[in-house]
Image: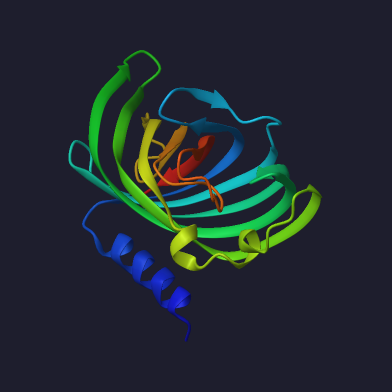
Length: 213
């Protein structure tokens, strides 16, 4: 069994074993912004790439306590600027995160609705299980495709806001339905970067729906 498979099952087992609500969430829309950071300025990397990005999350969370997440990301990038070239990319990633949860109850007495507004945030990291590159134009660097796994590890802080419908009269008592937003604030280079004076960070936001038990 590969190390990646062990990593996946270990993460899922840990999330499922915690004495907490277990939720499954999937994104239905996403937004990405690639930014360049130097000592003097911050600007959007041009041209901005186009991404088809899907996020799947398994979350074990306790309201007003903590959250542990295991997530997968299916990514297709078009026209991604890496070094001095443009690339199409296809990737699958697997990651984990842990954060603090703040829950605020919200209720509407007349229709019998009860909500919870959850805010969570904490550190995350993920690795790429697969990487596929197609060079389009500009300078070709073999290192873009051949970079080792340590250069591909992504890490930073995540935050999440979700609105949970946790009671509707006599229905859905054991099932919470959620809508929300996941945001990833990266501290690592998105791709191989040979410039020690500049960093390229890919900020991601996902709108999601899901259920929890």
